[in-house]
Structures are given as structure tokens and as C-alpha cells.
Image 1 (cartoon, protein in one colour):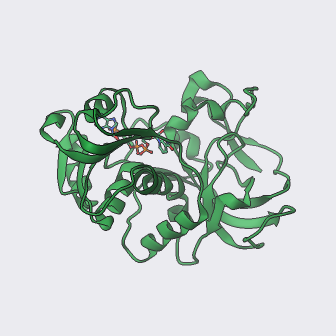
Image 2 (cartoon, helix red, strand yellow):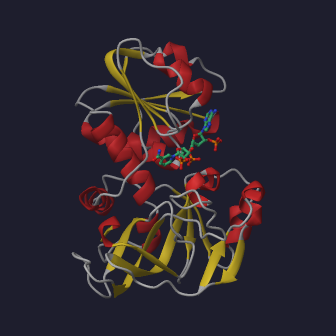
Length: 305
Ligand SMILES: NC(=O)c1ccc[n+]([C@@H]2O[C@H](COP(=O)([O-])OP(=O)(O)OC[C@H]3O[C@@H](n4cnc5c(N)ncnc54)[C@H](OP(=O)(O)O)[C@@H]3O)[C@@H](O)[C@H]2O)c1
């Protein structure tokens, strides 16, 4: 099969190569999925799990990509809830070969059915950004109706999902980002926008929940904006500052079949818009992933036309 591999962490996306690899086998509890579309998060080349296995041994050349939409072509012993030929989408294991390939082996529990009227590229854009937003707001953030939510990077892949889900839930949403993203963020449903390069974050106060996808100085300054009993949720590592009288939580997204179904249902009925920035083919993906243009939204690779 064709697959994109990485061997050199220092080279980043410029070290990616399109190669021939053997098709994966199907172990217990796994299914093989013929990948139709894959998502890619550029920061994944900085994650240790892209380069090593769980025992910290080198696993290069490794195949990146951890979210996909495709069709089940083989069922391993013990798999439940899926059938041959079924359209699926989901989140692949961080420590195994991923989804920038024609086939991937992954645990059945990490997949959910993809309804027939949802395009594979749309399905592939949802698992990481949609699940992260859902878990950040409702599990870790314990969002209550009517609360205020500050969403950093609100035009981004995760931020745009957070903005829409929080708005739908009845929160007052303030988005942040670059000046050029103001209208995009308001269109996703934020009531206010803070241009982090030119406007004072500190003018926003008394926030119940901050969802931080930027970190660094922005994350540190956000701790002081949280009202008593509020929460700072970081998806970019442990918070560097904690709210004086509130919670600080960091987490890594986990797969959840029921949440994937909730998310895709919202896309079907129009409550949630995908935020796909670019779609390339597998053959063109290395060049596309090395583009010098500013990325906007989710990066998708269409593996099968
Ligand atoms: N913990 C988890 O489970 C989890 C899950 C998903 C993602 N993540 C992490 O979350 C982060 C965001 O992921 P994503 O896929 O949403 O990325 P993305 O699509 O690039 O979104 C990030 C957004 O934030 C903006 N931004 C970044 N730094 C900024 C700054 N200093 N000032 C203003 N705007 C800024 C970006 O604009 P520019 O492009 O112009 O910088 C972009 O619009 C990544 O680090 C990713 O690894 C973590």
C-alpha cells in the first residue's frame, strides 16, 4: 500500500516521504480500515508517540495521522459493533502506525459508524477536533448553561468546534486569535472576539471556563481571568499558571463512539459546521503539508478518490 512515513524528527514535515509499505494484519480487537480520508495535526510530529512505542523504543519509519474516515475491510477476532463494508470514522492510537496510508489497523472501539450522507473528508475532519472540544467543554470543563467561555485560537480546528458546541449549549462565547480571524470566529458563533496581537486579553474578565489551545504566555495570563469556581482547561500541556480560586485541567483527547455519533449528528442537521482548511490527495500530501501559506482550519488528505 501507499503510505507517508517519517524518519527524522528534526526534519518535521519536510522529512515526510510517500513510500510502499506492506498492508497491516488484523490482530485481536482490531479492524482494518481502507482509508478514504485522513486528518493531520501538524504538531503531531512533535509528539513522542509519533517516534517511539509505549516502551520508548524507536518505531520509525512511522506513519503519521490519527484520524480517518473509511470503510472496514477486515474484522479481527473479538471485534464488536462493526461489520465488513461499513463506513466508519474515528481516532487512531497515538503509538501505532496511523492514517496517512491506504489501510490502517486500529481498535474497533475507536471507530463509530459514519452515516452515508456524510462525505469521508468531513468525517475525517471531526474526530480529533470534535472530540477534544466535546471533552474539554463537557467532561473536563463541566460547562453549565449560561456560563461564559473564553476560547483561545477560536478560528482553529479545535477552537472552531469549541466555539460552536459552547454556543449551542447556551454559553456566552468569547473567541480569540489573529486579527484576520475576527469575522470567522464571530461566524462560528462567538459573541465577542479578542485580537491577541493588538487587543488586551485582560479587558475580558470574570470567565467561567477558558479553553486554551495556545498555551505559553496566553495560557498564563488566562488564569487571572477566571472567576471563583471557574476552570482553565488546557489542551497544550499542563497549565503554567492556575486560577487563584478555581480548577486547572489538562488532558489528551480519547476516543468515544457515543460522542463521535453526537458530533456527526450535529454536522448532519446543521448545528455544527466543519472547518476544513485544505484537502490534498495522498500523492500530493507531502507538498501540501509543506506549503508556506498560512494554514486555516483542518488539514485533510483524501486518500481514495
Ligand atoms: N490535548 C489534546 O488532546 C489535543 C487535541 C487536539 C489538538 N491539540 C493541540 O491543540 C493545539 C491547537 O490545535 P488545532 O488543530 O486547533 O490547531 P490550529 O488549527 O492551528 O488552531 C490554532 C489556532 O490558534 C491560533 N494561534 C496560535 N497561537 C496564537 C497566538 N499566539 N495568537 C493568536 N492566535 C494564535 C492559530 O493561528 P496561527 O495559525 O496564525 O498561529 C490558529 O488559528 C495544537 O497545539 C494541538 O497539538 C491537543
